[in-house]
Length: 351
Ligand SMILES: CC(C)(COP(=O)(O)OP(=O)(O)OC[C@H]1O[C@@H](n2cnc3c(N)ncnc32)[C@H](O)[C@@H]1OP(=O)(O)O)[C@@H](O)C(=O)NCCC(=O)NCCS
Image (cartoon, rainbow, N blue to C red):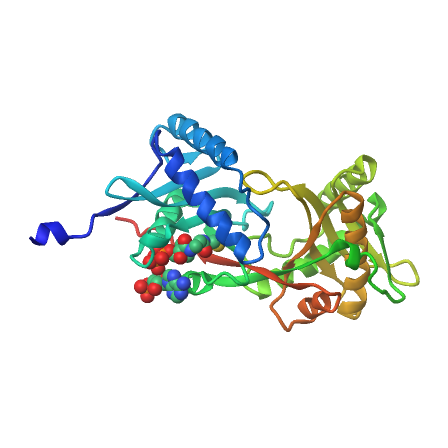
């Protein structure tokens, strides 16, 4: 009788053609849960998930049993041959220097409600870490996940070795665009601001390192090459007037005292396709009051967002709750939204 009651073995592997519908159903479950935590709405249109199922099957055919395709990892957890969990990983480098690690962004992690609590979530992340590590042997590598504040998965990430390193809050751009500001004024950055922006970037880099966020470059020495790159980037943004930009805040003398970036995106299916804006990379002169610089930057970011039809603005890459930066963001009417947790992927011991 023992054989009849033994739990079916679980396995983590690449998806195989024919599993698209089962995996799409997991995405549906995840997006419904996401919405319950106040996240962006997932589609309730079954046709969207049917299309996703077809795309997943096509994708599995192309992968031919390999989890890694280009910079994308896709893994399925199965029990008795039936998919009951899945995770994606996107591999990217957030920095330009050799010290910036490979970051594997953990996305759409889910273990179906009936399969939870038996180690599959941990197994999915461990296998994802192995896939990321094997994609770039010898390179420092971290896993990073963004977790909404109301999601009970915070305890899971803590148990599996992740630590929070960056926080974000969210606000209505129409309210943010009316924020009161003092004597500092924000405007779009120009190529001529390159040196000031580069100097402030070193402050941002130091702040990220202080809170343990190793995904980005450490503070870099300012040289003519770096200034030329930043100047060309700012000139292109000013010329193109697209959906991304750099903002600076200046004091009464016109000196640049802070900078931030803004980008507006349309969410892709299976999300309902709303526009959202991200205002982040707050780089602030420590000699000035934080709130006095953040207010004008957020106001300018919200105006940028409103002009491009964004329904929500997320203020990202903030320091921990109760820090001056986080509190300045809350004082503008924002509410807690998410945090980024990271885990270092250990280098395997030589045999
Ligand atoms: C988060 C999730 C993937 C965890 O999957 P799981 O298979 O249940 O997790 P595991 O069984 O591998 O748990 C690993 C550890 O985390 C702990 N843990 C898992 N969920 C937990 C929870 N909600 N609260 C407290 N601890 C939790 C487990 O007790 C276990 O601890 P242990 O190492 O001491 O035994 C799953 O709950 C889920 O799919 N949730 C909904 C979707 C979601 O939130 N995804 C993440 C989006 S960022």
